[in-house]
Structures are given as C-alpha cells and as structure tokens.
Image 1: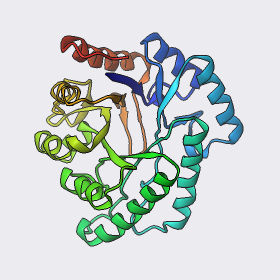
Image 2 (image 1 turned 120 degrees about the vertical axis):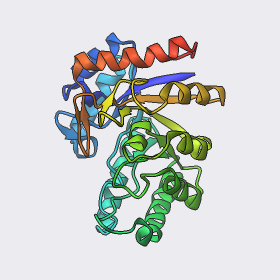
Image 3 (image 1 turned 30 degrees about the vertical axis):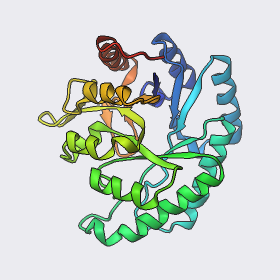
Length: 274
C-alpha cells in the first residue's frame, strides 16, 4: 500500500490553506517542514500546539518531521546541532510521528568528500544512536552538495552506521541532478529504502517536472517498490515553481498537476494508495 503525503509548505505557508488544498486532493498526511514562514524546528511551542490541534481536527497525520538536521557543513560545530536534533526528536514525540528526515552534511566546496568521511560516519552514527534510544527512525535523504549525494556514498553511510534507526529517503530528482544513474542507485539502495520522495527532474531542461515527465524513472521505481513489499509513505515534493537549497515552492495550482501526475501513475499500474 502506498500512503501519499506532501511537503505542504510547497502549497502555502498558511497551515489552513495547506490542509484545505491537500484535503481537496484526498491527501491526509504532511511531511512537516514549515508553516508561517518558519522552519518546523524554530516554531514556538504554542504554534506547535495549535498546529497539532488543527491536524487532529481535520483527520491528518505527519509522515515525518521534515527537519534540516545534517544541513550544516561537516566542518561546523556538532554540539549545537545536536541540540536542534533533540528538538526534532521532541517534536516527533509530540506529533506521535516517530520519523525524521535528515541529511549527511555539506562538504566544503573543492574538498574531496573522502577527506570528511570519518567525521560524517561518526556524526550519523551518533544521530542514529540517539534516535534508536527514543524509538525514532531517521530517513537519510540524498542531495547535491551533501556527503550522501551519490548512491555509493549514501550506501556507505547507511551500511557503515548499520542501524535500524537509519534508513534511506530515496529522492530520484536529486540523484538525476548530480548525474547519478537512477538504475544504479535503485539497484544499490532499494533494500535500504523506507521513504520515497516524489520529485522528478528533466536533465536536459535542468528543472523539476511532474512525476513521470523527467528522468527519475518514478513509475518503474514505484512499481518495483510495491512489488517488493513497500508499505510506506511516498511524499510529494514537486519543486515545480522554485527549487531552493532549503525548500521549494509549487503553489496550489501547480500542486494539482503534481498530484494528478502521481495518481495517474498509480492508477495506470493498479497500485493501491490512500
């Protein structure tokens, strides 16, 4: 079974509009990254209480806390970042969503990623250790400029840390953008994938496109994932209007295109979803 979720801040920064639009498309889950123009980790407790009540009243759940943990340079101090990670875990408990999206640290421009490997592995292992103690699963997303930008380095992190608390959030568009062959990435990592981002990328046009319209092989990957027993969230992160370092924007109208593309793929292949 595919469970559809979305980075709702791609629609609007207004939480009510986020939920109204998602409800109109039959989607009842959110990957919580931001509301009111503020990152999930920086919102006040009162804002979280209000948002949790809104989610509950409208029958919504969170697929994960869409945190920016791991989106600092590997040479930046780690102690202060761990405090933000504690905040992320507290919020995972607060929302009864024991899942957090994370990254594997920016590599300074010009540096050989291999020169920072040991520090990356140590930091990711510490995040996983703390998460496991709290009963939380971390989803490591691949991204350009991060140590884990290619399938080989994502596999290196996941297999070196070797924790049930650290799994892969597979983002096809991000792999295409760094010219990582999708076939190769999927073959190497599919057994480690527990979360799937629905974002596609046209390498020739160098821009994000609706699912199935780019080079991310999303229809095939979703079919193979379900055939292999995948039972988790697929999270719309279209980036159809703006694709930034920390977030993207699609807007209500183009978000409808993104939903239609994903549901069209699932319906055509007879894949059950909710």
